[in-house]
Length: 278
Image (cartoon, rainbow, N blue to C red; front, side, top):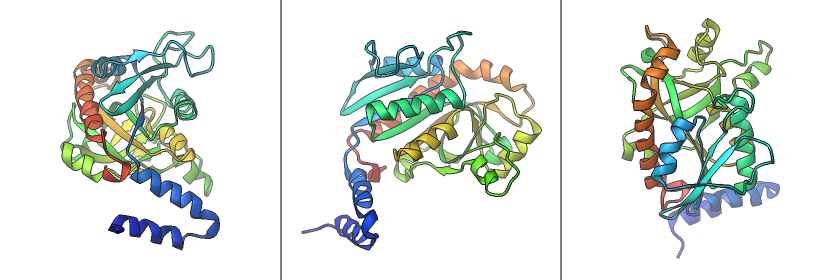
C-alpha cells in the first residue's frame, strides 16, 4: 500500500519530461532519505570552537583539502549524524580570520566535493536592520528564508539580477516553529560597515539580516544542488547609533554563546530526520 507522499512522488516523476525524470526522482529520494552528513560553514574561529567542543569534534590532520590552504575541518559523530565544521582558517599573510565571500565560496565548494553532505548549515554572527526587523535586538537568532548580495551593483539589464544573486534557503517550517526562531531575508556583502549604496541595496533586497558570507555559500550550494540553511545570531544593529565595528566586538562573546546554543538545538532537531521533515 502506497502512502500519500509516495503517490505524490510517483505523480511528480510521471509528469516530468523524459529527460528530467531521473533528476526529479533523485531529488525526491534525497528529500525522503534520513540526513546523515552535514557540513557547518563558520567564518570565525571564535564562533567555531564552542561548537567543536560541544560536539566533541577533532581536527582532521589528514586534510581532505588541497595542500597549502589554511582551511580547517573539525569532524566526528554526534548522535546519528556525521558532523563537519569547516572554518576557512587564518589568512596566510595577515593571520586574521578569512572572512568574506571569497573564502566562503571556496570552502563550500571544496567541502561539497570532498564530503558530499546531505545538508549545509551556514552559521555565524550578523547585523540586523532594526527598522525592518521591528523589534529585533542583539542576541536574537534568525533563520534566513532568502539570501542575496548587496554590494554587487551592475546597472545593466539582467546583469543587475545576476549581481543581486537572489536564492532561497531550504524551506524549514517545522524547524522554525519548533525552535521559535525569527525569520528574515539575509543580505551579504564583503564589508563590515554599511555604505549608503549598500544600505539602498539592502532595502531593495527587503533584507532584515546582514552578513559577509551567506549569499556566497548559497550560490555554491545551489550550483551543486545541496540544500542549505542559514542560522545567524545578531551582534549589531546596522541602522543603529553605535559604530558597527565597536558594537560587533562588544557583543561578539555573548552572542557567540547564543549562536552555539541555537546551532546545537538545530542539529538536535535535524538528527534522525529527512529534509522533508524540516
